[in-house]
Image 1: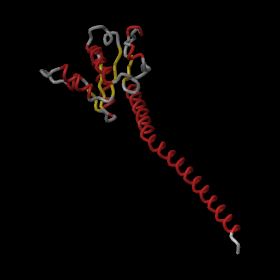
Image 2: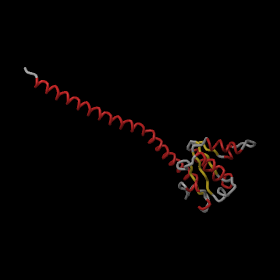
Image 3: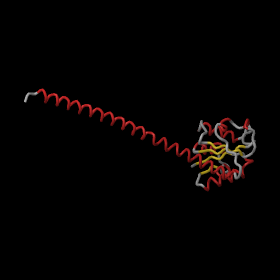
Image 4: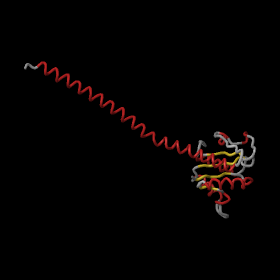
Length: 183
């Protein structure tokens, strides 16, 4: 699973800890301080990283939701990719931030408010969300087979009913014919 981690520079050490927890669970995490070499095009790399990601973790703090911050640009790219943030974006409240300052897109889903280790709780929440997404995907992949199975059962029932009616009619006709013929 490719995860894009969005955070303001003020939360770099906490974001690094979260990235390590996620990587320890074999997630491929885009962490800008590790994945953006000096001299490379920052905007293009971030845009490409979000486009190739399966999921985003957005660390909320007063700094990350301040107008003009790059984190809001990253969020806009995510919103373009995933108009519905459900099971795609995990907002994590890292520092007390008034909800009226949090973008509506992030408030459309439950905001994780860690009580203990932010890294451990974020990793657990990501795993739960990915599991739910996987179950939804499995359910969707079974649906065509369920519909086909139901259609086959209905068709078989109709064919069996028709065949029985034809068979009964043929017995009635042959029985009536046998009685009408003089012996």
